[in-house]
Amino acid sequence: MWAVGIGIILLYNLLIFYIGYNIWVWLKQISGDRKSIKIMFWVILVIFAYSFVFSRWLDESIFFTGLGAAWLSLFYFLILFLPAANIGVFLRRFTKIQKETFIKWTGYTLLVLIVGSFLFGMFNAYSPKAKTYQITIPKQVEGKPSLKIIMASDMHFGDLSGSGQAKKLVEYINSQKPDLVLFPGDIIDDDITPFLEKGIPEILKQIEAPVYASLGNHDRDDVDLVPIFNNSGMRVLDDEVLNLPEGIVLVGRKDRGYQDVVRAELQALMKEVDVAKPVILLEHQPYDLDIAEKNGVDLILSGHTHRGQVAPGNLITNMIFENDWGYLKKGELQSIVSSGYGVWGLPLRIGTRSEIVQIDVTFKP
Image (cartoon, rainbow, N blue to C red; front, side, top):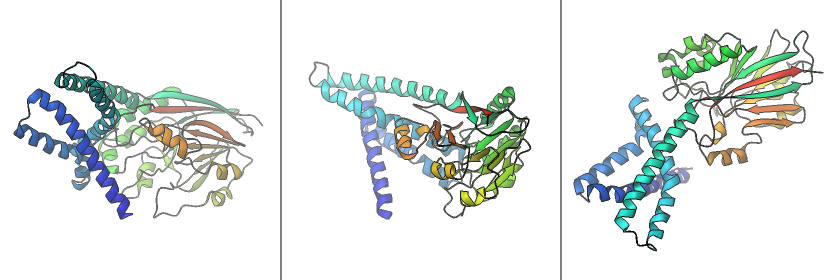
């Protein structure tokens, strides 16, 4: 384990050097190869590159948290684009273009490309789209032929997603007049403090429909979050079964990401369930669909994957999860996984989009 950690640190520092070397090669074409500027550049780069570490040391400093998010975004784009720039500089030798001129304009082009990509990524992250699914559950609910559900996962309310995003979510939910609102985990981003300081509980209380939630791997802090969330306009199902007045059964599970918490087996939870009724399971991470199907779950709602959040992360999530995003039918089980409403780490999305999910359910035995 130590060897893996040391290997990751070494690789990260090599990548920082690779990035720094390339940026300096470009900068010295503009500023000249002055020692004072070179030292200043490397000091700033190191602070920038370790800002997310400083944020942890300095009690979740908002300044370093923001700086860390900006660095991770820049790091992502540079690792993505710099190899192409290096190839371009190498191929330049087969042309008559002066090396210094080519490096200078390659740097400017890269700068424009990164800024444009960053703005595009922020738009994808903070302008969620609506995604609608129409499904049928082959069971009868007395006096309830259909059900309109709004689902939002992975809000990650905190330093990168604040009251503005919460208000936007609430306004959209209320405009759709759903029967039910479901949050399958990652309501906060590892720290309850900004959630409370930004007044998000009071905003969420304005939702005009019943709200039920399960916890995700980022819903953690030194305090018990369940009563806090329960006082924020929602009802948390933490390894719990709830029979709704509409004749529907909701099951919410503890997240599998907590290594120090033992969660109930789904089979044990389902012993309390009348499977003649429609059964909806809130399971933050979309694993073990076969187990849910065998235990009589009709609809499982998940998040967690962010659909990779930034390309090519979507290729990785697609390999890990049977259903990493969208709709999948497995036997009698129907699975819907959201790409999420918020972001984690980087304040952007490339190759995916933040979303709010609407599920129109028809009951037809």
